[in-house]
Image 1 (cartoon, one colour):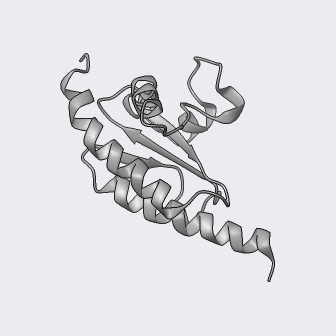
Image 2: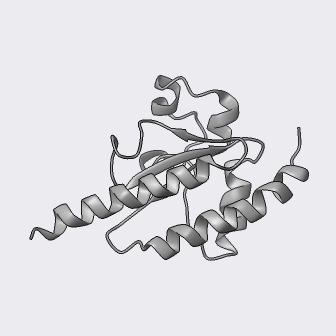
Length: 130
């Protein structure tokens, strides 16, 4: 039994399930490789029609803490080099958020996050500037 390896598998499974649920929502895209093929602790998704900062602050009110952009560029306004290299459109880059998972992230927390995102997306899109 090797705890870090088990924790890594749990994050990978959690990220995969979360990604699948998110992709069931309208205009939601997973950026990067499939969760099972990428970093097990990071999931990046775009919510087209809602700026990432707006979604970030809306979810903070529900005690869901996500990030806009990569960890190493969280205070920069420039486009992510990784997202550009992946060919992600400007529309998707502007609506991208990052979920960072740990061995302490539970299935219930991921389910709660996806459920809340599903509730707020239609409202935020209704009032988004086009």
